[in-house]
Length: 113
Length: 496
Image (cartoon, rainbow over all chains, first blue to last red; front, side, top):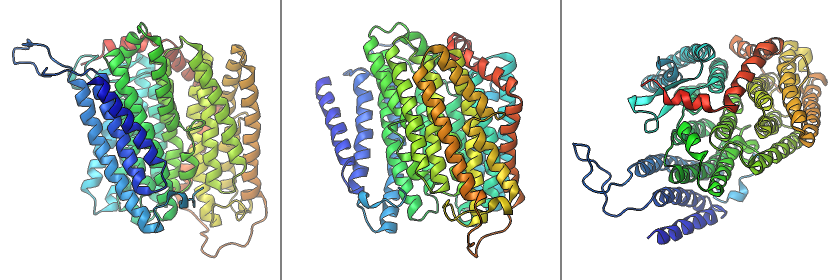
């Protein structure tokens, strides 16, 4: 399972970077989204995969069986929320760029260089 | 007790919330923003005084004990950075109230400005590495919108480049935090410092250090990761440029210094040699880029990059003197650089353009502005009696003591080139005869613009005159950085 996820993460990073290197604004943003997914999955995988272990303690505080670490999931949740906000902003920015410049070719956005 | 540590975060937070409630009344927002910026300044001064007199302060948020909850820690370095944020926050708030157009002021400028200050203060005060990521994102989000707000083509294009490269750095940072957690099992920086000292696999720790170097290096605009900065910083209104130029890259530098003095402490020479090489290349490429520019703010933007090199030079030398030089240099640079951006705004007001070729004659028309330019410009180039001279002196002395003669030679050469390009601005903008003026040029500027610009210049001057106390403060801050045990102890007995 770890190996499979490692491959998935690698493909996501590679795909994300490839899309960011394209000239279109749309693929740039898809690339950014893929990068953040890859980072989230990376946190999930490196902190140890556990099957059937709840991250919860009963009321008495004594675990019934093996428990898993809830912290990585909390980190990922935070990162997903932040990533969502950022993605929404970049989509708006892309739309605005297209409205103003009339182009979605990144190579043509050179007026500030 | 812990209130002082939370105030620099809470004041901007509540101000931003109140400004949002007062959305329709932008004049109310402006007053709120000004009052709150000065309140933040007072809170920061109180915090610095407390840290100076009673040592490192730490508090646990939500009363969760140390390695599990989030710590807020203020050592002398953090407190100084919060203090300078307060100073700059107040000065630029005054400047923006007098210079921004009504459309921007009434469309969320003030809430965003204070969210930005909150993010910066939070990043300086947090003692938890994931929390640092969150503060970085808060700061970036506010800066994204401020950069793009109300913009035409230039601003939008600048924002696009800025957003893309900063988001890439954020994703590297996030991945590095996740990997660090899997290696050490903790996110508290003091706890990380303790655990990584005896890490079983030093190879992995070095890889992690490299990931953090890339992530913070992008945010600090070091060579070769700085290209987003000169492509975007000259596009927004001057007030926004000034606060970005002063604070944002320095948060990256702060994070570099914090992480490489506390968590990835020098046990392999490799990392610090690498930082030293990066420092030298950053200085050289930045200043060479600046010389080629003919736009006031673009020239200054390249200088930001160049000066980041000096800041991380002290970190790379990793001697108490070198770090003291870095700390003093950061403080001085924040003041001088924002000051120069504010001056560029005034020059544009009087001359009608940012283009150096089309400006001129301002010495004759506005001699006060010429003086306000010369103080930060000469300080930046490192001429006595300004504080920039003393900061560079410390760095160069540290370099000589460490036997790193190449970096010393580079630092001195780059200083000369800095002086050269400052003189280029001087001759083009102030000295040469005035060209035909655009009819829309304004003859006067509000008192707020003059006051904020002059107060920053006065501070640069005052720090130069009071170089002794400033040096003592930086030296003590560096002593705490070199010996992280006091930081770790402060966190472990933090108030709940």
